[in-house]
Length: 45
Image (cartoon, rainbow, N blue to C red; front, top):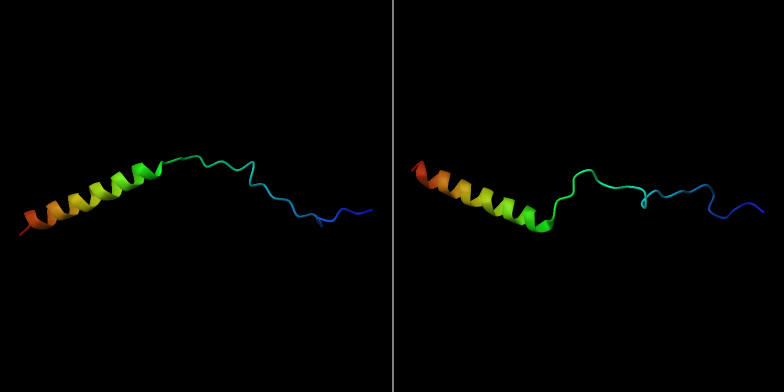
């Protein structure tokens, strides 16, 4: 009997990202960029 999956294979278990960043680090970086832009904007005036 042939198998029922028709040759469909998933590789999600084997995939691992090279760079792993925590969500907290992303939020801190975005906050830092926003503050930096505000400081630069008001220093130019």
